[in-house]
Length: 164
Image (cartoon, rainbow, N blue to C red; front, side, top):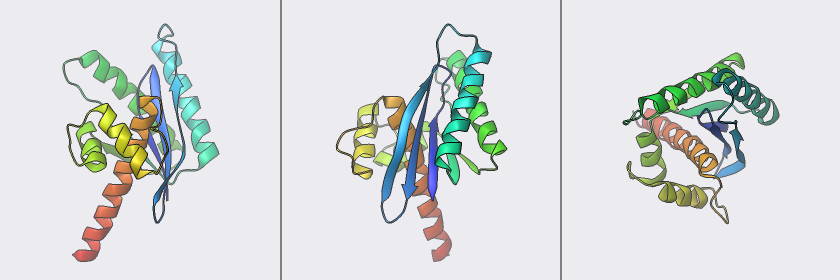
């Protein structure tokens, strides 16, 4: 099974593709970057086109997307929500199942601690995927973490279904 993980954003949108087999293996990762001074509509259009190309190239089976974290900056959460909606739309247009995870769920699944910092997440992503170095930039590593979270959650759900 091939998972496309997405860390949504309207300036930097991270993506990571992970194959789930006997062990997880990174296929690709990166960041779609958009000019801050471009109109929001242009950045969202570019995100749509970029994600469409990634899906066409890598043929994921499922898509996992990180939910926005509102915190104290509501404007930022709204912008991330717009990027998330674009990612959902791209996946839906390709008839791909979409799964959404909160930042805390991602951290919990990847590091076993829901309040891990970015460095801890990056290091666990490196270790779980057997990489020599942590994926850079952090948006790409975060997207890989979302894909890993989905794989771990799917494995747990299958195990629970078999136990019940």
